[in-house]
Image 1 (cartoon, rainbow over the protein chains, first blue to last red):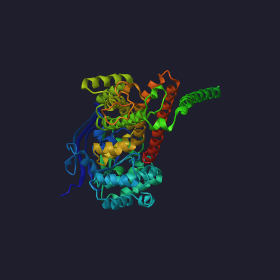
Image 2: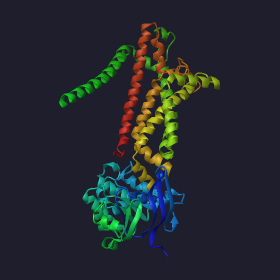
Image 3: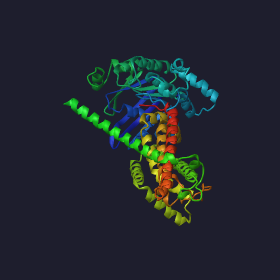
Image 4: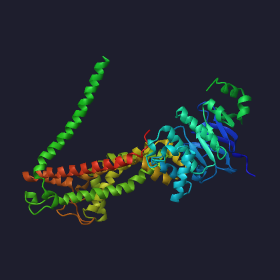
Length: 252
Length: 282
């Protein structure tokens, strides 16, 4: 039987240059739900997210131990990093399109996912651009540079590119923080639409955003997970003092 | 008071700019006005005839061909060795700060060594290998001389590739090879072309590195083992002549050298422009 959690984190400790960043984190991320990680700046939200696709390995002087089970497989001991990373699509704080055309940005993801048949790539590029609601805006200029898109369009391009590697997980690190309200809404709306096919982990510091879209909430403070629960219970009935204070807006 | 300061600084900057432009224009004026009268089709299309160095018939095709062969050969070698070396620093060794610091320090030292020292070094190696002064020997020497320039210049533009873009590539499951040659390379391409251009200018313009290693000959080199003349050496030797016509031809050779560099510069700018459109600017 398929585990109802896509990720199980057990006793995860991360330090960078000897400084502990994440302390003894144990956590489950439910499958096909939107899990929102909230907490004040510098509490380790992004670091936790980066552990889930091993982007943390790019950091200098980092030490990671514990277990992160993705579909019951410990990704921290896995040596095939590209394969681990392809299981997750990443949306960062601001969009980073690749220095190539709109079409090739998506095709790059497809090729990394092991697809090389040109006709199939053509069809899939269209498919993923449609999924990210970008197709109508770019269908006449697929070979224009990605840098010519607006920042909101670029973020949707990054979403389409992330979906193109055919991941099970979407990791989003404050994906709307650089966007205007309408583009932000488009991204949130998209998350709603795709959550029955993907498990989404979203880091945000916007409490209202968490209330709007979360199915499951993780609250972090100073490198520790203080509380995690399904969204309704979390907001209606927080268990810890810190959580209460945070969701009342007493500190950021 | 503020306004006076503003005006003062403004004037200072305008003077500095004017000064630079004036020097450049003056150099071009001197070289062209002294050389243009001796410049002829014969000068470009023929090798020195007998008595050329006494002011008689002939041209400097030998030096033009030698310079073009030499700079193309060494720039090709420098690209083949230099770009992977710079990629190594930025893609493969990102997490070994001590090694990269040491490596960059070495390269900076190599950059600072005067070209005559490379010439002497190349000469020693050639003696040791039993080689004659030749096009091949000069190519090796000039390659050694421009390698630190090209590596550090490419390294500088690779360092400007944003971290977020690298993360985006890795997050898509790209391996290091794909990262280096598809992502870093594309994003940095305009800068890489500038780096190549810079090295090309140094390769074609340097006289000291090839003084002992290229030899000098009146014929167009037909193999790597034959000696080669170069334009800077042609300028150097002819300028030292007591005969006015020969000295004038030195300036004509300088004009040709300047024009070659200009042509390379303009065409590579045009190429850069074509590729700049894909570069993501932040």
